[in-house]
Length: 252
Image 1 (cartoon, one colour):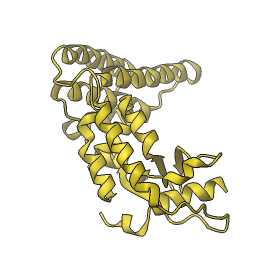
Image 2 (image 1 turned 180 degrees about the horizontal axis):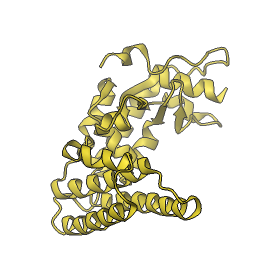
Image 3 (image 1 turned 90 degrees about the vertical axis):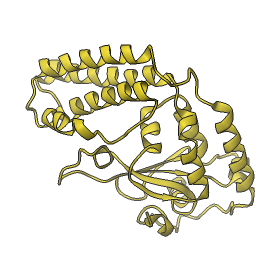
Image 4 (image 1 turned 180 degrees about the vertical axis):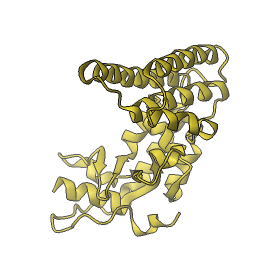
């Protein structure tokens, strides 16, 4: 029943859908999956029940993951890299009026908090890579590539105040790491250099100290009020998992 509800919310109440992962980063190869991410708005009356609507949903399509709007905004305000990159994907598949307003709020989520959040994710990735190197004697080069990509993204975001998801001129450098054409010592040296560059960027970043929480909350409240009239009927288990985002969402 929980899956049916979640998949129904994704199919019928998605407001924004995009492609993420290697395809959005400009790092895709023939073997790359198509990772889809989305945002849905649960009808407001569903929050009046004892069992609240899900904060996130896996599926119904392969490689598909969606967040309920409030959860999405909360994580993005904390400068979660995955959520911020989702908002800045160059591969938008669908955005209705609410989704377009969410996109218009992209800059409201950006702040100097990105330094800590992006670096935190990078530190976790580095720790996992080094643990695997110690325990298994090998490096997962794809993960090493994304570690460098994340630090490059953090540096450039702090320098410019703009988040660019596609790696652009760094593509060949990063793919060489993915192919294992760089030593672990070279990767670690690059990590140290990027941290130094992030340090320098922080001192003169145009980003504000904090995100514009009030502006985002005003948006969320207006969406909740508008969703009061949305169909609150919970689907039964007979509703199967559809092919992915709503039919209207197939139009880019």
